[in-house]
Each structure stands twice: as structure tokens, then as C-alpha cells.
Length: 507
Image 1 (cartoon, rainbow, N blue to C red):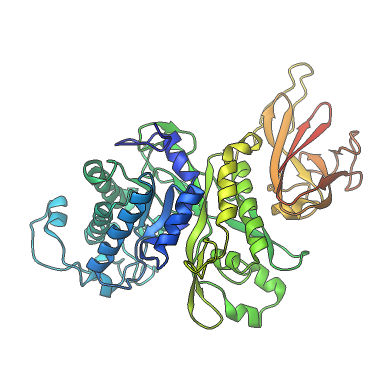
Image 2 (spheres, rainbow, N blue to C red):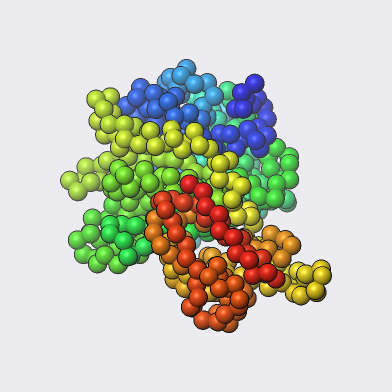
């Protein structure tokens, strides 16, 4: 039986199988290169198409949209029946999209209302005036907004979609006390999926670290864009990733308590490249302006092919070691906004060819990454929880109290998102792993010579290094860290009573 098999239930190991082969495939169901996209899906082993269907602002009539989604889903499933297509229910609605759609009888019936002949009401979906939200943000405490979400979700299930991305869920539930409204909608869609989905199961994520009510998670896994820290001493636009938050736990929709639910990262989009910034801001100002003057995917797309391949590999390894519950939705297809000519552009992973002239030629890089798999680097991973441990821990022989804060510091720190030589950094704080030992794993994106030392209690008054195991004070006496290859995984282990430091590297 395939690792991806499920019917009516999806244990965590099956969910992780799909997330470990996930991509962001924004609007692939309306792709003008669908045949070539399917070729890439089969070649690389993609199993989860995130953001495959949905609207932000509709570009075609409602029925035409769903007919297109259904036809594309059928083509994709004919090529690989295992693939999950994800639809989107977002934090925005537009009057011309909502008010033109008749409310089907089955929506009234599902909400226990008398059937009437009318269209959806845009005004009844919105937040009250003066609530400081976007003018077109749905208020999920309102029944009309719930009905709209349920309507579109059910139609996507009928098209063959088995997953939903719920967007910035904490924004449109601002008045939905206790998440009763959105919980109702998700529950109704789960129930409908149990009867009518391809494999009698639909799964949900949103931009959230936790959405738990009475101990139970409304979501199957949490999802978030990545966070970055710019590097200014390298040519071009270089940045490194920084861990932000964690995935909360709770009782999963499968009824199993999870200390931390799975987590899915992505390169997000929200406006494309900021051409004004490139004309009016300094290099340093752009570096701190979102992702160097644009959104995440447009920053990525405008790098050279070599740098894009390196950053994909870096993101994969970074995810594997910084969040053992985490996975990355590699970009297969994503809008990158207007180009310098004002025309909208789209990033596509496909190798550039007559079948996909707009391809960015990275399918071979993804195939290589998927072949390696997350498990190659999981043994080096930092703990899933952000609690660094070490509280009230004592050496059983001597009675010595172990330090609660231990930090690795040195010239390497800016390349993992921290200030150089910061002995008090939370970014490079080590995790207590027991028996008087501490450990930290990070990915060094660039080869070179660096230095490092270990600071106990976050102070420069009691430090050790591989060059000087006897405690010293100040920033001197640091040991060398040689990185022979870009994107090297580095694990530092420190034993408090012996001052022993071990450096492991993996590529």
C-alpha cells in the first residue's frame, strides 16, 4: 500500500508524506502550461498542490471558474491519483463577485434556513463600519459570510479538491468570539467531505501558529510565510531565514493529541517587486523593506538561476533542522506581480522550453531535493518546542547547577540571522538536551572561514571555545569554523562541566 493512501482518515504519517512533497501551485487549475506542469509533477514526485484553485478577485464568471477547476483536477488526477489539490478561501471578498451569485437551495438547507430566491449579500458579509478592517474583509461571525465560505468550499470539493488554505484566519475572525463561526464552517465542510470528497477526507490549514478551542485544533496543520534577516556584506541581494514562533499543539482533527502539529512554510506573495524602492531607496533601505524591496516570491524569482537553486536547497535544509515538525511548500507556480514593463508575470519552476517559455528552469533542483528527503537532516534538528530547557537542572555527581542560558556566538551569527558576536542572542541560544549537554543546529549558506565560542548564562565573563577550552572572558580566543561548501548543516554540542565543544557538519 502506498505511503499516500488514505480514505476517510489521514494519520499524521500520511499527512506528513504529502507535506514533505508539497509545492505552492497558485492557480495551477487555470495554467496556460498545464500539460507541462503535469509533466513536472510526475517527474519530481510532487504530491500536494497548495493554492491550486481559488480567487482573490475573480477573473472569469463563477460557473466558468468551477468548470475550469474541475477539468484541470481531472487531468492532474488522471496523471497521478494520489495528488491533493488545495483550494483557497481568503480574507477578502468583492461585491461584483459575491452579489452576482445566487444562493443555492442546499446552502439554505445546510444552515437550517427556509429556501428563498436571492443572491448572496455582499453587505451582510462585512464587518460593521468603524472596525478598522479592510473594506472588503468578510466577518465570519456573520451567517452570510459563513454561508459564502461554505458555498465555495463545497463547490471546490465537488471539483476534486481535498484541502483548503484559509488565508489570514485571525483577521476575518476578529469578531468571531471563540471561533464559533469559522469552526462551524470548517465542521460543515469536513462533514460534506466525509460523504463526497474523492477520498472522504478534506484537510485545512491557515496562516496561524495555533487555532485550538477546548483543546481541539480546528486545523490539520499550521502554515506561515518565512521570516528573513538581510546580509549586507555580500554582493547582490542576500538574506538568511530566521525562525519565528512555533506550531502549537492540541488534539488533531484525527482525535490524537499532538505536542506540536505539522507546520508548512512558503514563499508568500502580496504585491510583487517594488520598482519605486529600486529607484528611490538605498541598498540598505531596500534590504530592510520587506524582502529587499518586494514580496518573498518576487525577491526569489529575480535572483539568478544559480542563486535560486542554492536558496531552494538552503530553505529545505533550514526547514529540516529548525523545525522538525516543519515542511516547505516549494514554489511551483506563483504570481510575482508586474515586471518593469508593467505586465504581470508568473514564476514557474518548469524548465524553460517551447512548452513553457516562461519557465525558470528549477525542476531538476526540486527533483534532487525531494530525492534526498527531509529525513537526511532531521537527526540534526533542533527541538520542536522553543523552550530551551535547562531550568533547575543539576549535575547528579557534583550538585552543580547547569546554566539556563547558553549561547553560541561569533562572526558566523549574521549568517543565521543574529548580530555578530552577540553572546546574549536568542537566535543562537542552545537547547538543553540532558546530561549537562546543550546543542544547536543551523545552516551556513556561504562557504568561508568564521569563528565561534560558547557563552554560558549569556555573558562574556565565562566563555569557552575549541581553541581555548579553559574559561575566558571577552570576545577573544574564539575557535575557527570552516565551511567548505554553501548550505552546510552545522550542529554544535557543548558539555558544561568538561567544556567540550563538538562540531558536526553535513551537506
